[in-house]
Length: 272
Image (tube, rainbow, N blue to C red; front, side, top):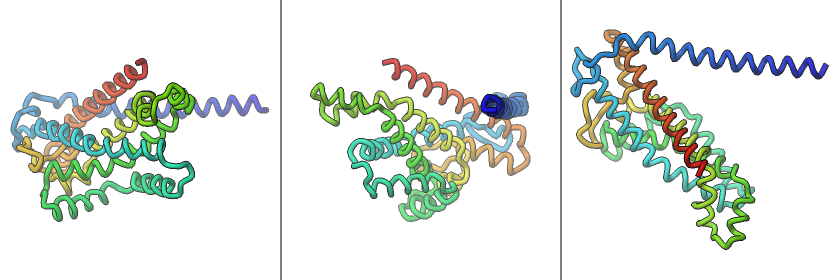
């Protein structure tokens, strides 16, 4: 009886894996089939107009938005995670409250972050609809995700490595940056990759903070649309649906390149 249950559970697991993989292949194939035929040089023109609906300004804005958001979120998330996992006393109620708050913030809809960014960054600080306002809003959005994944990666490092480092005379700070962090890099990069995916695919929050202007930004206070906002705008207008699918192809390729590069970096660091 136990053997039959084991085979049934194994079959269910295999079936779930096949269905998941099949759905993923279907989505990727559908986007490629609908979008590849409409990729043309005009979509990569320097300036946007109603005829070429160029996505090049949106690609530049997406890269800037991603870099700015990560530049703001990673240091705060990393150092907070180091404090929670390496310095804070275990069982501390304040630490548990911080973790619960971070997990709660990670589940808040992006439209709420967008409204906060509109009220605080755009209006109160006077940044207007800008790359800076959008990047600051997205950094707050991904901060709980990066913080929690980094903390879990640090806690997964065996205590024996820390004890061996302490036994050789290394201090706590040196142990953290020379032993613990390198061992936790794959887990940290996993959180960063998830954060990048949320940044690249975000629409609602950026409409309220970065705006929808389709042009190359002059500076961080310039308004600009990302690829996801560009795709949403084209599809909602209803006149350039095919170009919206082509934009989705480029967006998919960017995400794949980022994920592949991050995985290669993590593998290289792990070998060292």
